Amino acid sequence: MRAPTPDLLLDAPLSALCQRGLVDPIQRRSRLIACILDPKGLGTGLLCGADGWIVTNKHVAPNAGPFRVILADGRNVAGVGVHQSPHFDLAIVKIAIDTPDYFDLTQDVSDDFGVGTEVWAIGHPRGCRFSVSRGIVSNPYRLIDDEYFVQSDAAINPGNSGGPLLDARGHLVGIVSMMAANAQGLGFAVPAEVVADYVKQVRRLVSSQVVHVPTALLAEAQEKQHGTAGTARDGIEQLVATGRAEVENLEEEELGGSMKLRRGKTQVDVRWDDGVLVARSRITALGPHEAADARLLYEVLELNSLPDLGGAAFGIRDGGIEVSMRRGVDRLTAVDAFALVDRVLELASTWSERVARMVLERTQRAFVPSDAYAAPSPYGAPPAPPAGPYAPPPYAPPGAPAAPYAPPPYAPPGAPYAAPPGTPPYAPPPGAPYAPPPGTPPYAAPPGAPPYAPAPPPGAPPYAPPPTDGGLSTGKPVFPQPRAPVFGGAIPDWPPPGDPSKK
Image 1 (spheres, rainbow, N blue to C red):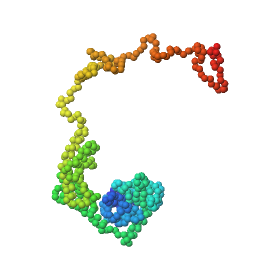
Image 2: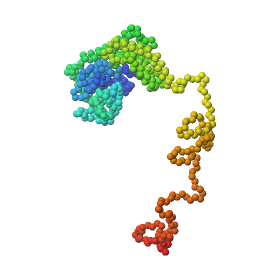
Image 3: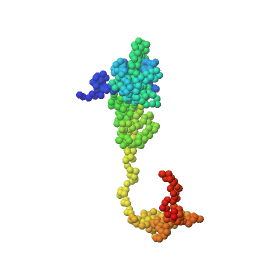
Image 4: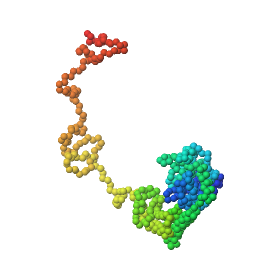
């Protein structure tokens, strides 16, 4: 069986892909989330209807908006707030396009999870769009401020709010709502049953015209996004019409597009999407050694301090040095778009040779030794002079002027030291402690001399060696000891029987 291509997977309905087993549940659910942005930050939402309904947190969409919504397929659309729950951290956002693929809250809601159930959280943590983290359910009924939440240890960060918490089958366990500050592994989600009931209730309120969708605000926001993208495209088309560039490739999208322009040998990639107009041109390519050279990167960044760049910037990207400019499409006129692209074309053509020369010089300095910068001799390096015989340097008394340096003559290893002729005998400086000259043998007493003994202090009695006759000369034992009882308790007589001192 032929493996499905990515285009086939993107074009096929999700239900058909699930039946054929070509997409796992978590991967296919990741195509049903959206990124919701406003001037204060971003959050996550879950597509819950074919008419462009998105369920998210109330703190993500606290009012009618409008909001900027980015879908998983890259489409950038406008959205408005429809309803905010007064009891739960839930809200509904409506976008201006239909979404045939959505999460069915009437069927794909899990109610059999418990402690230890494996779950996945999908969202945009810290702006890292469409990220997935995994964990388990720590407590399915955590009570916080009289509301029940599903507690899990899946990684939750700012930006995950409003995203789905799914089980292994892809069924909804809850909508991520918050995390514990100054803690790890403590995330909380609104239970899936509460989410499904809330969406059903809001649809009932809209159908009964109790709640009205702000369609006028939605149309105005959508027209504004279409208009700014069209303005950027008009400016680029005027640049081409004046003959200052030629179009090589054009890719149109619903709310954006890209274009490749050429002026002579200079090529510029222009893209207007995601609320930003970007024009960039590669000046020169870099090898692996140049791309890893920190000094070269510093020199490239130093170019950005030049006053004649007009808002452009040099940088290293995808193995090359490029110059680029970017502008937000809000309040962007066709003249601004014209000038931006024309400026990048001009800088790329005038700086390409200069930057390439800078890279070449930096590469040569990195690989040529420092002594190679001296002018080479046409006759080669001079030969080294032969070494002469070794001789110790002559002695110079303290304070004498230094003699000119001469290499010492060679002496074979182990040869005795001999002072040069005419060298005066060594004399230590006044007050220096005596030290025998080098080579003096250690002192040895003459044969037959008595061993050395220190002199006794004044008034001390003459030395007499202890008796060695067992006490016969003194009548006392050599080692008197106090009489002590023995094991039987009897005190022995002293001296003991047979001692010669009793005679």
